[in-house]
Image: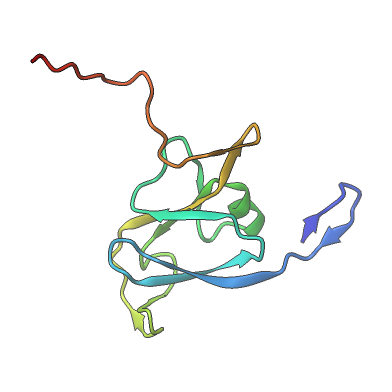
Length: 122
C-alpha cells in the first residue's frame, strides 16, 4: 500500500514478477517489482555512492533505494533460462535503477574528475 496524498488515501501497488540474469553465471533470479519499473542496468559491481536495498527488504524500501544488491543463489531460488532449478554462483550482482539528481538523470559509474592525470613525455 502506498500513501498517495499524505491524507490517508492509500493505493495498492500492482506488482509483477521480474527476472534478472546474473552477469557472472547466467542464472536467473526473480523478484516482485511494481509495474512502473525504472531499471537501468545489471552489473557485477556496485555503483560508487549508490545505496542498495536487499531483495528481502519491504517493497517500498527497495524501490526508494538506488538499486537492489543480489547474491546469486543466496537470495532465493535461481533457475536456468528455461526455468529449471539450479545452484547460483554465490557472487554479488547489482540491479541499478535510473537515478536523478536535481532533475538530471545520472549516468552509472560516472567518470572521476580531478583524478589522476597522465603526461607522456615524447
